[in-house]
Amino acid sequence: MTWVRMHSQALKGGALLLLLILIYTGIFTADRITWLMEVTPVVIIVPLLLATQQRYPLTPLLYLLIFLHAIILMVGGMYTYAKVPIGFDVQEMFDLSRNPYDKLGHFFQGLVPALAAREILLRGGYVNGRKMTGFVVCCIALAISATYELIEWWAALAMGQGADDFLGTQGDQWDTQSDMFCALLGSLTTVLILGRYHQRQLERYFPLAVPAFDRSAQK
Image (tube, rainbow, N blue to C red; front, side, top):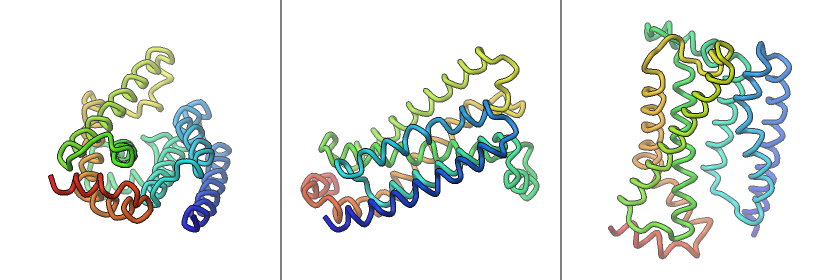
């Protein structure tokens, strides 16, 4: 398929750019251990996408959002989330009590997994009905967010005080709850705002699955 070849080249170009950013952030990071923990998802997911691009290509929208999420993770790893410069600018602009950059990361932690779940569920015909699809993808995104919070807890137990930069709580006792709330907002953005555009891409690039989508749209 021509579009698969075109997207394959774009994916390889994006992966190369991410590799360069990964190297840059790794060289100039202030804390290599924290950086490594933050960028581990990127190191795992990007090669996986390259390996499956022919067998199971994704929509351009999903690839784009994964690309942006990867950059957010790498920048957060380079500075640590509590010290990202643009976060301080936003903090000053809105008179916030803390650097909010980590909340952007958790928003994407809901947005991207929800979109990926939506794509897999619809293409596989695992869920029928627009409302049920929206509910399930939000549940999946929140489950992933909760799992990540458990990982942060385990890291805190293992590393002790050294986990502060990885956790990025900045003294906020409600940090875990607000992180999961941001992930919920991200998943709702996928369902309520990106859903129709994503649907059009699915119908364009994967027409064999269109009948299942049409049934979903009618419910």
